[in-house]
Length: 333
Image 1 (spheres, rainbow, N blue to C red):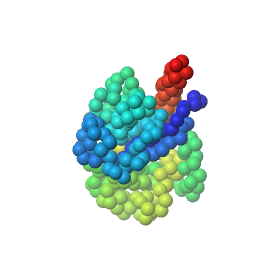
Image 2: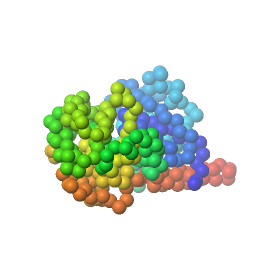
Image 3: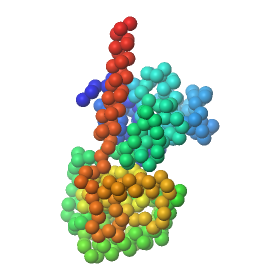
């Protein structure tokens, strides 16, 4: 594997989805990785990543100690706030830091060395890579580790159906009414074919949705996990042992991770979806990766959706070419 020099900063806010993507890509580069969780002050936070004037004041005093020289060789950011700092680094390092931004920065991609934005974002540019889904760490080794972490799941009746719950977003309502409809559909099928239900909530999942499912699934083999009160997060184990996955339609990250597993993936949609998320769903369906919960024989692509390694390989090549050219130029002087 191409050896890269220096260290990599993975820059995010508190959002777990952004952290998972930035770290999944950073850890594939074979470089020491430092994870920086940064928050800008107003007005930079309001206008990120457009406003970079007065950049040294963008961070509160508590953040300036970590966002300081020596600058990294590579910086990978995910999310709008991180885009401010990866854009700053290009100037602060005089071009010495190779800057990568994950997700649509909503301004010209030329402000970064590379932008990685999913196809449904429709970002164009010579330095833009367009995976179908979001970046993640799900591969055979990750799934095997998940099974090892939850060995008791092997005793659950099959099919083991993992149910991944997101939360409301603009244009997508996931309330108690949605939960009742989802529960009715899952229970009807569980009564016909048996098996178990392994339900995992996210930070965005409402209490109303969780409690509706807790009540509905009493007596059904499996589990419901909604936070620390339910014990250790079994998410990797659920994905590792699942015979089928059902994912709420709101989350690109959860749908991408589910489609990386290699089992059938279904979703439950009760109303028209917003444009971007609808385009993503249609792409998954066209690839044979996603079907509706009411389909008794869900389609499954021959190949799981695993794009992170290929994206990392492309990125390593471009960073390596930059480092080689810089080294060659330095040696010629």
